[in-house]
Image 1 (cartoon, rainbow, N blue to C red):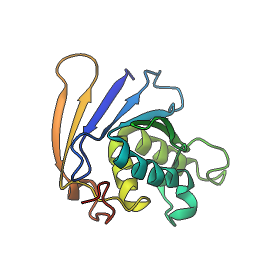
Image 2 (image 1 turned 180 degrees about the horizontal axis):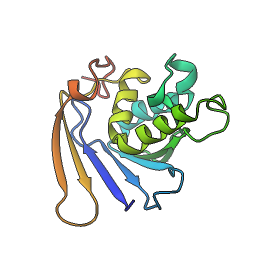
Image 3 (image 1 turned 90 degrees about the horizontal axis):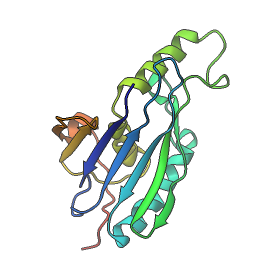
Image 4 (image 1 turned 60 degrees about the vertical axis):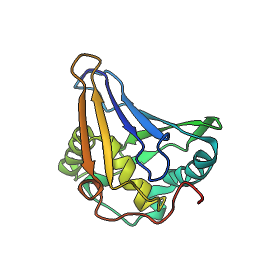
Length: 173
C-alpha cells in the first residue's frame, strides 16, 4: 500500500480555519496496519476545546459500550505541539492477541479488513460525535491525495458519515 493523505478542512461549523490531515504510511500489504497519525490545526481558542474533547478518545472502550468488527481500534492521547496544532494516532487492534478470543480468527480478519478499507477520517468524525459530542458541519469536504495527480475531492453530507450530530460547538458566539 502506498502512502495516502486524507485532508478534511473545516469539518466543524463556525470554524472555517480548523481541519485535520490523516497520513497513512506506506507499507507492505502483508504487514499489520501501522498507526495512522492525525494532525489537527486551527485557531488557539477552538483548538483548546477540541484537544480537551480529543483527550477522551483514548478512553473510547470505557466510554462507548460498542463491540464488533468496526470497533477493533484505539486512539492515542492527543499531544498538543503548539496552541494551534495537535497530533494523535489511530491504532489498529484487530491483530492483538488479547482483543478477541482465540477461536475468533474470522472476527479478527473482518476487523482487520474493516480498519484497512474504511477511510479513517470518517471514523475520526464519527468519534468526534460519539465520544466528544462535537457538532459537525452538515457538508464536509474530503481530499484524498496519493502524491500523484489527480487528487480526489469529495463533499459528503454529514448524515452519510454519521446519522447523529453532537451539540458542542468549538466557538463561542
